[in-house]
Amino acid sequence: MATTTTADKGGSQEVNSRLTASLLNGRNYMPWARAVSVALGGRSKIGHIMGTVTPPAATDDKFEYWRSSDNQVMTWIFNSMEPEVYEIFAYSETAKELWDSVKEHYGNQNNILGCLSCNKRYVKPNNFLRNPLTNILV
Image (cartoon, rainbow, N blue to C red; front, side):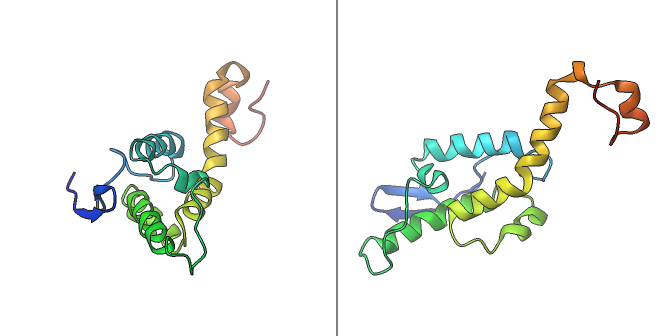
């Protein structure tokens, strides 16, 4: 994984790298989100997506530092997406907005699939194969 570094108040930080080995493709949201959260936590940037690092007022001296840090998080997340997925979210304004939008877009469908795979005892395989959208629950 190629990276580029830039000087920052805290030393040097990667700016053009992926956070995860696998890219978000729309079908792997749950493991992707976990991997991104862990990677951001390891870089002390998790607060940008959790909402605990909030932007100061635009007139505050710290605003440019916050924006630089937030853009860095957005870049990492964008670089961890398939190009088709990136195009959907490319115009997000903040890392928190990006994270919430991705979760809203992909999170629910993965929860449904996860429930079905985790609760196989409630699924009638024969009915599922014949008609996957109806009559699958016991």
